[in-house]
Image 1 (cartoon, helix red, strand yellow):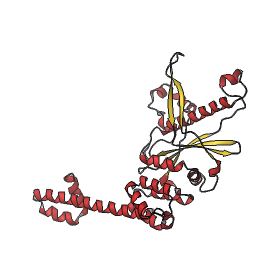
Image 2 (cartoon, rainbow, N blue to C red):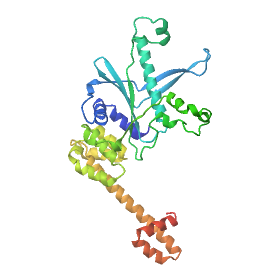
Image 3 (cartoon, rainbow, N blue to C red):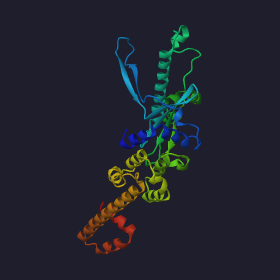
Length: 325
């Protein structure tokens, strides 16, 4: 995982934040899940896998890592919910999520075996579970917070070659749709930060989602921070750190904490200073670029084009392309 995903996963690991994320993104803000219902599931599992069919071959242990994984209890039953944070598109996400969930079901089978008091026999022994035993449901939520639109597959069938051009289907044209129905599908539960309504969250997730939705537009970020200044001024330290990393503001954190010691953290001020720095850097870069263009036009004795470039932005952009600036 990258630094941005690490920061977001650390935030989502908090039971209060996790419950708020589920309620706000899945249940439209209704308080269905509470922090008291949550229990951590190990995010790292090791599965024993053999590399060959011969029993003499030594098994290999393959490590599987989840971003965030918690069990949501109701009485004696529970559902396992995993969250995978993504700031980049993963075009193999359906297969990846399937593997995560199968790994969790295997872990539950192992837990049944370890907790079972009586030995199994017959078909139950062969199956590794008793006829009346049940596994708990497992689901995975992919939380995409990248800047670019998500254009990956959200269904396994979309990853498969089920087109007429497939030579296997050409041989069995009359059975094509029968084969497709026999191939199990898998759907990815994709949640995109850009599509969320931040007002449905109650914790720091509200500000976190609000900033993520506007991360590409500095003007919108400024407007959002001004409109929600009161809440943002009271932002907790964990959310402050997460937002700072997601918006590439790590250098602002220590300085602002020292200047606001005893008064909490001031993300509004961080956004203002960051926007000012970006604006100044952009102006300096623009000045250097135009200076290079001026030098190039003077060297080419194109004074008339230089005069026009001063006031005609479209023409100036064409000259930038012409001189590869």
